Length: 427
View 1 (spheres, one colour):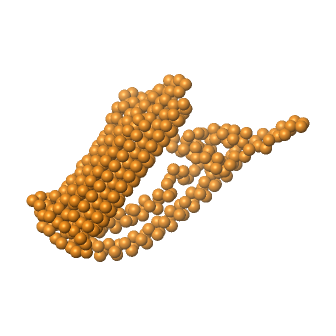
View 2 (view 1 turned 45 degrees about the vertical axis):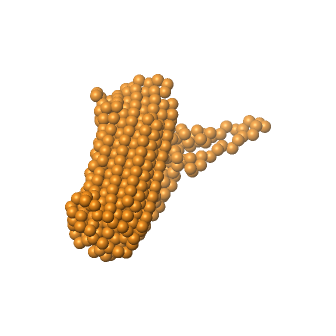
View 3 (view 1 turned 90 degrees about the vertical axis):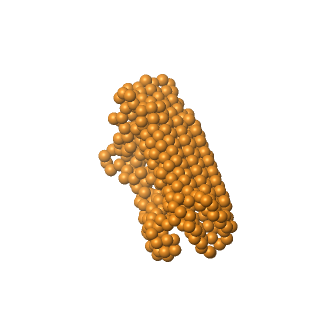
């Protein structure tokens, strides 16, 4: 793979018309572009450089560069470019870490965005999308899951086919359509509008003063601090109120409030609405050792991946610093040494995750056994009438018992209700 250096100044505009393989872009403190590729063509312009590559392409560019990319047939990885970045089409994954602002057309696989100092605009992603840190966020169609955090502006989203997770959004939020569940926390804008969520909505308050509307086909669970002002209107076939002390109810609606001048929250669903205080995250189990010491909602399958990514993130941070100071060749040699250590750490993390899963499984079995011990004894059967066949009493399966335990743990039903439900299932 050949290497060539071009002097371009401090703030060049780099244009990549086509890259037939993977594209990797890094920045450094020098005023030159360093190109590594097996087969490429360049054209020097008044503002910078134009590049076309018939192979994979690796660039090291000045920190203050702006970058315009038309088509990449492989993966895209860009780190710490202070200017604007535009990417028209990527046929693989795309990962952008650090930019002034970002505009993307289409990504055929997954998209990861982090630490963008300006706005982010994306038209279509056919995989999952993760955004960590930007100003205004504008998304068209996301065909996988969406996770967005630390958005220091508005979030305007057209359609998400997977799950939605929004956390820490300073401005207003609009999601026109979601095909699965939505998990919302730390929304600080004065308006929120989710008019069409096909799955469940889990909303953690508080919210800023203003109007916030949520419509779903599944269940809606509102977690709200009991000391925060709120006016809520809920419409659903089933509404469970564990938050408001004074309400007005009809057959399928409820209206109530806490304090004065709070945000107006409108909830509408074909499923069930549950209103819960934030101080009631844990169920009120009896004192005889019945309190769970684990969380059913913990994602053990993702545990190893998250910790593993943190290990490699530290390695990437160190190699990026070396690359900025000493150039890409030195950084690559050092990265090989760090990689071996990171692999050992990944093995340790995987073993720890497996131990955590085994501990959770044991705790679930113990909880099920304790639930059975605390169940009141069934009354004796009356003697069978002459010449009348008695149907055998159905037994509650372990799977049904576990589902009821989960419902109690999440606060959906009380322990008394759980006992009633178990007795009903047993006929």
